[in-house]
Image 1 (tube, rainbow, N blue to C red):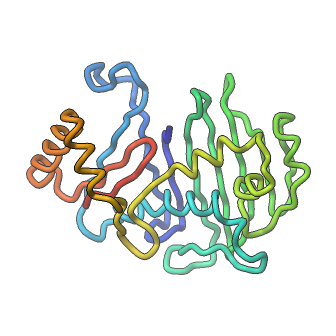
Image 2: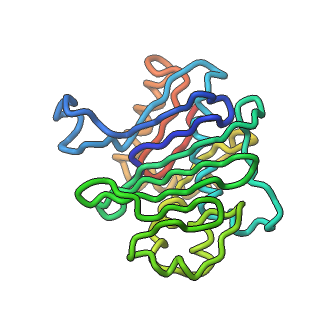
Length: 238
C-alpha cells in the first residue's frame, strides 16, 4: 500500500513535491472508515501545473527500482532535473507491506547514485539498509545476504538484489513492480490494452460500473482536470 511519495529537483519540481494518502486525526469517521489512509486521491490543477509530473515520480521509481540493473554498467541514470541543473535530486516513497511500514530514500547526482536508504518501522522508523555510492555502509541482520552482491552506480540495490534472487528484499521489489501509471517521461499512454475485458468487468460488476459512471458525471462539473491516484495504481484521468 502506497502511503506517501515525493521528489525534489525533478522535472518541474525544484523545491519538491509531496503526495500523501495519510489522513489526519481530525478526519471524520464517515470518510476515514476507521483507516488512517485514503485509497484514492484527486490532484486538481490547471494544464501545465505539474499534475502529470507528479505521476512521473512514481513511474521513475518503478523503472529505477525494478529495471535499472538491466542497463549497461557505463550508462547514466536517465531523469530530468529542474531546468537541467547539476544539483542532487531526491526521491522518497513510504509504503506498507503486510502492515509493516517502510520508507525508501534515494539521492542522485549527475546520473549516478549518491545514496539509497531503506527504513522499516517496528516501534519507530529505523534505517535497516544504508547504501553510500557503491558500498553498503550499514544493514540490519535481516539483510545480511546483501553482502554477497556487487553494486553499480546506475543500478538500484532493489533491482540488483532481485537479479541476484535474494529473498530478503524481494517484497520491496514487488511493491515497486506493482506501481502502474499511464504517465511517463514522454507523456500519457494507454493503460488499457483489451477493452473487451473492461466491458466484461463492468457488465458483471454493477458496483464498479455505477461508481465509474458517477465519476464521469461529476468530474467536469466539480473536479475539472482531476488526477486520480490510488494506493497501488496511479491512473491519470486528465
